[in-house]
Amino acid sequence: MTRIVLLPGDGIGPEVTEQARLCLAYLSERRELNLSFETHDFGGAAIDRHGEPLPEATLAACRAADGILLGAVGGPDWDDAPARPEAGLLGLRAALGLFANLRPARVIAGLEHLSPIRGDLVRGADILIVRELTGGAYFGTKTIDAERASDEFAYTREEIERVAHVAFAAARRRANRLTLVDKANVLATSRLWRQVVGEIALGYPEVAVEYVYVDAAAMALITNPRRFDVILTENMFGDILSDELAVIPGSIGLLASASTGTERAALFEPIHGSAPEIAGMDVANPAGAIASAAMLLDHVGQSEMAFLLRGALDDVLSSGTLTADLGGGASCSEFGEAVRTRIDARLCRVDAVRS
Ligand code: NAD
Ligand code: IPM
Ligand code: MN
Image 1 (cartoon, rainbow, N blue to C red):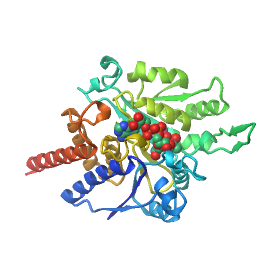
Image 2 (image 1 turned 90 degrees about the vertical axis):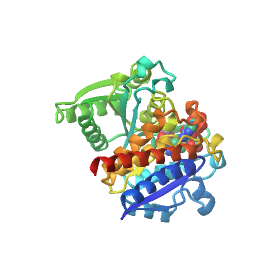
Image 3 (image 1 turned 180 degrees about the vertical axis):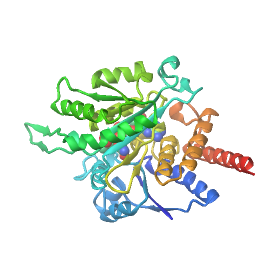
């Protein structure tokens, strides 16, 4: 039995997570994958029911899970709450030691027109951002009074080393290119990042390493996306650049992520937020959540099924079934249903080849 914990969360979180769950359940049934699902309260929904965004029972279930599939958290209802939903997300990342956040994006051949950027620029773009997820300004000491506020922005050598190894290993599986994005012309933390990454690079001689300042990287990412393969960067730069990354394939609704770390449990979530203005309307794009489910399948040792699910997702997008964010008329649930139809077609093809 493979235990999957679902944390639908807030806003469009439950809608997109449900489509991803249905895809996993469908695959599980058809191929006897033995996936089990349990849903837990998290984020604003947990504040409403339990008074806190990350209840003890939710955390315990996550620790025991083989994989966690999260929707999104946050929204205007809780912006002034004493503990915000977002604090639950940061608490979960910290509690599970999820220091490496992988955010891939690629432009499917033939779908260049979905990008607001010129097709000749985005054609063939295939980028993985490896974002450090449990350090930096997000987790440093914070102070605030009426006159002054501060966020400590610190990194240790060990924090840099462990995520750098994840990024170099990923580069080795991909195109053997790694770009460290930093602000080493200003920040002491960035100078330590450069030093440590330079040392670790010696152990990966096949990987070509480049160093780019974050301001220049923000521009290059959309003017020359093919320049990048793996981008390694600290927590906040990675947060900002990954939303920008979403512009390349055309919508933030497409992007998935995997967070792994020191414990067995790993977390999979689309990179978008709870999009409160479209919540409950069945119009959100569930592709990022479904692609996150594919990353979860890889994590639990079902790489063949992960490949098939990604293929089905690409089939649907290529067929022109698109949600409103990409200019289409499909609803969230129709898109999910179309993915399951393509899963079925691909499974039948595999069976036909084998028999
Ligand atoms: P957002 O990602 O929710 O939305 C940004 C824009 O993208 C909006 O126009 C939205 O409609 C659109 N969008 C996002 N996901 C979409 C999808 N799947 N399909 C179609 N359109 C989509 O970011 P925001 O508006 O800055 O934040 C809203 C709330 O979400 C805030 O409370 C924020 O803190 C939270 N948030 C949570 C996460 C998370 O849970 N991981 C991530 C980012 C933001
Ligand atoms: C993300 C989100 C979170 C982050 C917020 C909601 C805390 O923007 O996962 O990208 O900043 O890490
Ligand atoms: Mn973000």
